[in-house]
Length: 140
Image 1 (cartoon, one colour):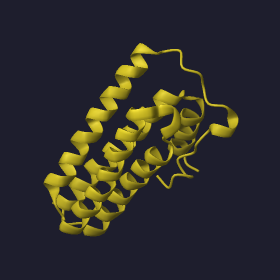
Image 2 (cartoon, rainbow, N blue to C red; image 1 turned 180 degrees about the vertical axis):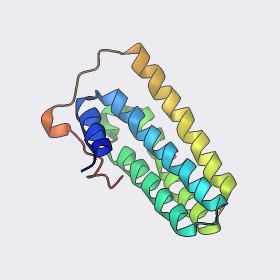
Image 3 (tube, rainbow, N blue to C red; image 1 turned 135 degrees about the horizontal axis):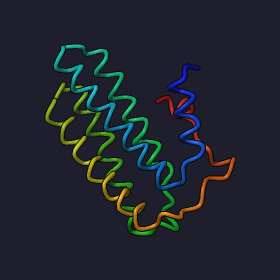
Image 4 (tube, rainbow, N blue to C red; image 1 turned 60 degrees about the vertical axis):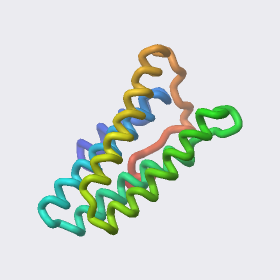
């Protein structure tokens, strides 16, 4: 494992829940920006790889929702994540740069909302050891 992956693993395992969500959004946004760059360079294989990485993150965010406790917000986030996942499938198949940019915009809006929540609740509890996630487990 290289130094960057070690840093990422330490950052993930020591982050609180809200910061981890923001980190996931950062990752998905970064992967989609890379996918756009690949598309512009006509690197279709790279485009597909990076869209898939972003989809994995969206899927992880979706799977981590607690619908019972999260109520209407969790239900709405599930709808957004499901939309994004399949929108990215369409963007990948159609090689549509505008759809990728729109997906980035949606993720950035959601990320900003989570950053605001994090700012208002700076003392969130840290994950327990059993809740720690690694970037490798999510295939990021």
